[in-house]
Amino acid sequence: KSIHIGNRKGLQTNKIEVRPGTFDAMEYLERLGQTAVVVSIDGTTEAVIGLIDKARAEASHVIQVLRKKMGVKVYMLTGDNSRTARVIASNIGIH
Image (spheres, rainbow, N blue to C red):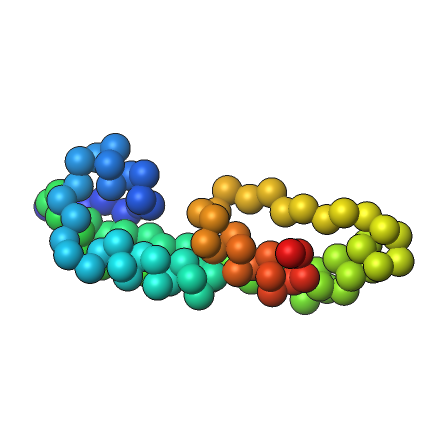
């Protein structure tokens, strides 16, 4: 058996057959702030798993201090997809 674990780009790159509901499941997890990872077996999607990347406990406080007390404009650079990034940024006070 051939097993592939990857993201949306990997589906296209590896010419994986995408079953109905796969993209819906990915988008659902991404709206929750999770990174969606797809498991494919023998060239067909079989499962979508959500991985959670939690910000450090002090991140919100640090961002608040930078913005309010120091006047710094805060931005977040990430390799995550935009839906996941927006949720994480919002959770730590970056708008």
